[in-house]
Length: 173
Image (cartoon, rainbow, N blue to C red; front, top):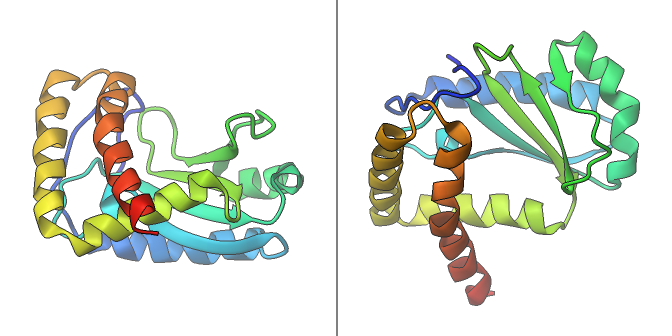
């Protein structure tokens, strides 16, 4: 489990990813219990049968992003790396694992924010549309071959596909 922060390698889906999310969720709920509103396994590892980078993405919603830094020391004591950026991008990113073997990304965002909604809508759409999962996987495989040592470019190249799916779900609302 885990991957170098710059590398792109896809693995076949495994139910272990759900178990790893559940284990981490217990720890995070305990640390953030006073501010946590909701927690969700998101990203490709949350979608059965989708090849993914072996990194668990977790989205956490909180009432007020300004409260998050109060929990930085507790997160760090539990083995997480906290990025002190004042939530400038509308989220705090918390990571687990070092740069050579990153295992988890925890995205802490405000409840009802655009970022929270996007995480949920994208996952919802993929779970409901196996044909889109296949299309997304094909794109990911193509991009992982093209950008195997450049995760930023890989991620950026997926953005249009992801944005289109989110827009489909938003237009249903």
